[in-house]
Image (cartoon, rainbow, N blue to C red; front, side):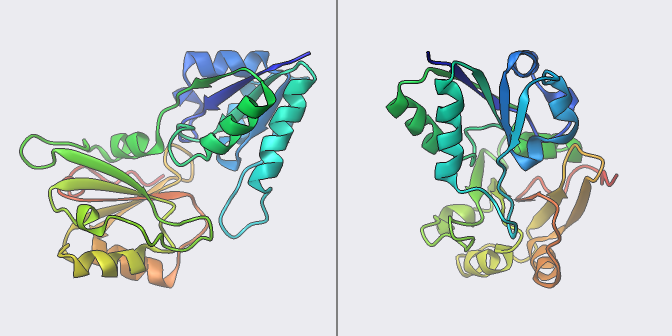
Length: 245
């Protein structure tokens, strides 16, 4: 007897940003394997008798290994259950989706992927800015700030990331942003480039810090904190208003 897995993007944390399809799958699931950032009020959409299993990964904290998470998905589905794999933001954006898809395919388990509101789009909306603008910011680029070992990736396209006419969103980059900025400045990115540090967006703990890339790098050199965060920089980051909770 084979079950079914729904990969559900939960959005940035506000349960009101769940899609109707996401809420429907949560309400019908026998088991929910959820990330840390997908917990809290979002899980209130799950059935009272559903198994709720935390499998999230957070920097600096003990976390389950990816092969263990993939194994859990397969084991639950093999019992015939409908499993929801609940991921923060959109599961296809720096969400380690591929490893889990491979495990299900190898086990012959059917699945679906339900997109969620990406945290980058939620951060831009909360900050009151677009991510593109005619003639000024024709391109937006998403990049991860750390590799599997938690260090700055060595294969980043630094010239593209230093493009003054692009809006760039750095995921999981608080610890490595000072080093990244030094590399970008060496490629010509001005220290005065507008930047935003958006933390815990759409949750009661959200905060936004505005400045320049250099000021944010100096700030993060002293203290990174524990809140999940995005760093946005480029020609549109000077717009909007602060939205501290």
